[in-house]
Amino acid sequence: MGLLENKVVLITGASRGIGRSIAVECVKQGAKVAFTYLSSAEKAKALEDELTANGGIAKGFKSDASDFDQAQQLVEEVVKEFETVDVLINNAGITRDTLLMRMTEEQWDEVISTNLKSAFNLTKAVIRPMLKARSGSIINMSSVVGVSGNAGQANYAASKAGLIGFTKSIAQELGSRNIRCNAIAPGFIETEMTGSLDEKVVQEWRNSIPLKRGGTPEDVSNLTVFLASDMSAYITGQTLNVCGGMLM
Image (cartoon, rainbow, N blue to C red):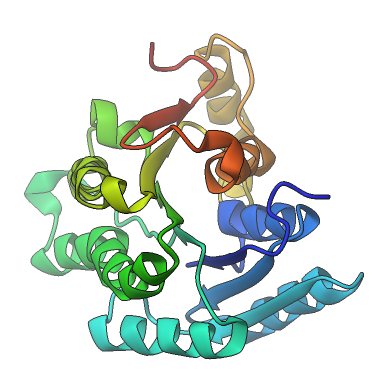
């Protein structure tokens, strides 16, 4: 029996990278997975086919997590399809990197809306089914950049730091109802996005990490499954770094 047997897991932004890895691992652990995508219907269909190929239960939903009304409608559709939501993973995120003096208002607003407001939208939407069940796990995907800051990423750092404060507040609000909320702060994770970077630069990053390697999406998804499962039943309000020792 898997760690997430019969749990309904909702993941935002799961068509690639870390979100995709989380969806795959959740299905392996017995969860019924609902995931969102925004633009790539082809990738979403491929993921849905992969997740259901060996008897897994999964469905993709086209939805913009940063849109309040779409988030409410999404959760209604997921509850109609799967009856409840046991786990919410706020994974949707974007970057618009540039120095603050060059950053436009649009670049600021896009990142805050997608990375931070979306967590508010989805968390508010799942509270009702979780309160009804008197249980739930909410996991917010932050970043080590939200803990330490980073030049050229003021918008991204602010959004990810905001998620940590949001996580602590929700944990306090909902803890008495047996609803937990934690954040994960990945460090340098090697995905298809980092694959386009100069190899020499990537190797320099690896060398600066105590474990001397970049993280894998599986490093993040393994922790996500733990926080989603009953094995972490006494953990809430925490931010766990998955960074190979970058932050100590």
